[in-house]
Image (cartoon, rainbow, N blue to C red; front, side, top):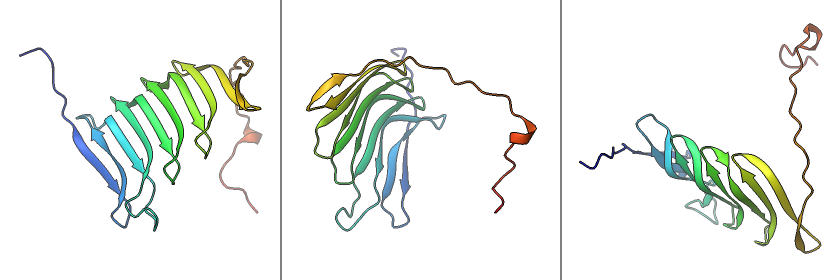
Length: 150
């Protein structure tokens, strides 16, 4: 034996009511997503078999690796990389013509800096310091006990 353990993978598929595919990927023996997963738009007259909406990789239930997203016409609109469930590296956003419009740079889920297309070129945006969110204590007169009464 080479000392490596093999992981059991179960092919998992979800379907729309008409029988076309919603998603396809693998689960490990802990029922966590692993490997490549594809999520599909609902089928239409133009695309009877559906077309991919998102393709993403997982490791032990966390996003890990490449992620891409397309319009329902099949045009790439977003691509990014994940590491252990966090954005890591470049995240690119494209317009409907396929032109690169934004690039965000992440490290361990934290946004380091961004570039946006302005006047025909990518421009580095000034970094805005992150402000931690503060959870205020709940007062009795501010509680939300359900839907609004009309």
